[in-house]
Amino acid sequence: MAGNTTGKAFRVTTWGESHGPALGALIDGCPAGLSLSVEDIQEVLDRRRPSGQVASTTRAEKDEVEILSGVFEGDTTGTPISLMIRNHDARSSSYEELKDLFRPGHGDYTYLQKYGLRDWRGGGRSSGRETAARVAAGAVAAKLIGAAGINVVAYTKNIGGIEISSSDVRPTQSWIDKVRQNRLYCPEEAAAAAMEEKIAAARAEGDTLGGVVEIIVTGCPAGLGEPVFEKIDAALASALVSIGSVKAVEIGEGIGVAMKKGSEINDEMDERGFTKNSSGGILAGITTGQDIIMRAWCKPIPSIARPQQTQDANGRLQTISIQGRHDICVIPRIVPVCEAMVSLVLADHWLRQKAVRL
Image 1 (cartoon, rainbow, N blue to C red):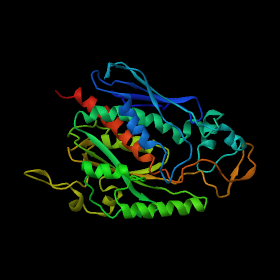
Image 2 (cartoon, helix red, strand yellow):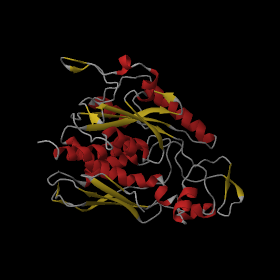
Image 3 (tube, rainbow, N blue to C red):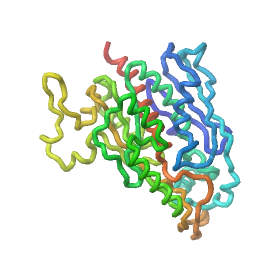
Image 4 (cartoon, rainbow, N blue to C red):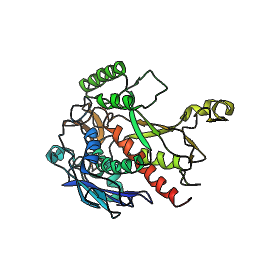
């Protein structure tokens, strides 16, 4: 299967299925001498786990990462870093009755059309379970760019139409700590409480919700990005949309710029530099040195308990109702996944820039 590798200088290949023995990532291109431990990766993986999260599945995977290669005595060696996360709580028998049905909103039909067969155990490679490997690799990327002063933080901006009131977020360390202590990774307690109520109502109705994640990058230097087809905004958008639930990405003011005049959105400069940041920290596909601001729009989880019409593998109409262990909303678990994908892109472009200019 092609399409499992991303990056050029910082190159990552992920592998594994939802109900296979394990998932993992192979990182090639990480420089030698970076301090790296299991704890560095595990801390980020733990934020992706469903434990204690109101919107999440009851599948209880520990997501304990193993570093198989590329690290010696606490430092990267410059050779490929191999990471593995074993699956312990898969229940494939729960999918037996669905193996010949196309679940609405899932990749069952399209995977069968592409490959002529499909792994029906929890969606196989198309399951959101594969994002655990992305998060593990992203933790390494975050450690690398963090050493250069680049920091990536994401948070929940909207769930089911309930949005935080603040439009000017400044990610101080105390603000980041507050976000990560909240069960929904939401910075506003009142909004988080309303979101939890909306999630509980959707669960009771046998339904699911979507939402919006905002990602902010601070400390990114000017000059990252490649013309013409590998602009950094194109790379970031591609990385975020590669996450299964993400259907749209905005950068800076996003779609709002289509309704404004050039005089309203151009980022003017004075003697101190840029006076505003409508562009979201990127101009002509290259970073400006300002904060990079993005939003990922996520669809509702497609596994719902309400009856839906579909076809089976023989083209016969069927009614399907999906029971079992499923998230009610992809947020908050997708928040560290968004951070990981942005970190991977930035690590790749940061290393590529090192080869462009002394």
